[in-house]
Length: 406
Image 1 (cartoon, rainbow, N blue to C red):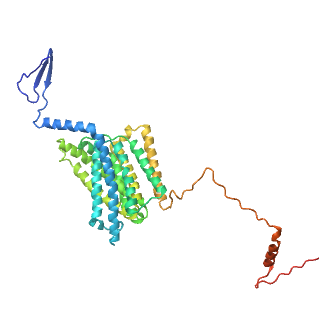
Image 2: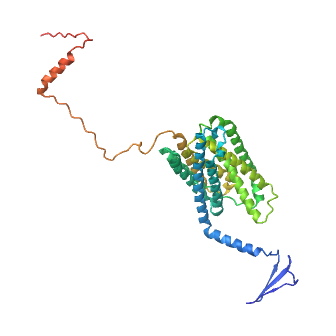
Image 3: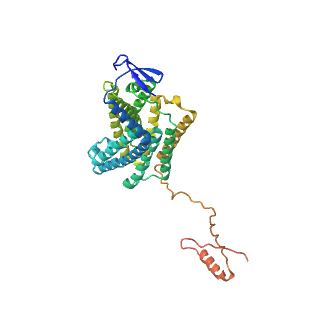
């Protein structure tokens, strides 16, 4: 078989026609664009990257997810220890509006560890599916609970531990049955999604709710109710996740050569991300300053996951692809989360542990029956003496006279 190429014009400019002859067949091809000298290298590089991604991408994503859980769980302990050191020095606490923790190296170590964990989490989403990465985030709750018991001396009662497990189980079920994300490949597509009326209404409701919580509810009940500060962090966190997704699309388009620098959306998303991180850090420090770490982090994870999934559903209109099983699973997971949070918050002050639970036996040993008192005839003198002692009047009492007829 012989393959011959013929070009009638003798040039290879765009729009030229090239004829390919293979045996008795002729094929006409039109040149669309030229190939620059750098493109063969890029094509080889992309092929190598795709090969590695397809072969090891899942395991890389799972490994990054485990690393993220460890770093984030550890960062909470470091930040809590920094806040405890701040209280020991007598400075203004974070809950009272103090920012002395910004001078503490332990707190900055926790902040750097949390930033590294978020970067690892972002990389995990790039390699592994969200249905695997997000449930693994519950491991950070267990890591923080274990470290808080050893490093901070904090503990949860038995109902609190059960509530923590129920919360993680509900979050896992909810994420597994959550609809798949619609792929957004360009900045223009992301901008059109964010201009949708449904998402704008949803975002306005979240912003108004946060403003009410920050300026009205938090000053009155924030130091008594653990849910106030955590709800603020979770709602603001949904905006940070949306901004991170949009910036990820921007970075990918930038390396693809698309004109993203002139688009205003990346700068708006960067501003949203910066503001949301500042607000999250502020109110999360207030929650850690007052309440137990073993309570703060599980509840924060639950509310954060719930709000992020709801925001993703509204932004990408994912309910069109949800089946009946996914709808029931999502609602069941949400109800399970509510029950777990109720157990964590309602019974936190009760002293309940495994030792205090009642123990039952299959064949309990009956208690010995008391033996009846037997009075013998030999003890009649003792009885008479006791009667005489009992009948003797005390000095304070008048003697009693009994008259008998013979």
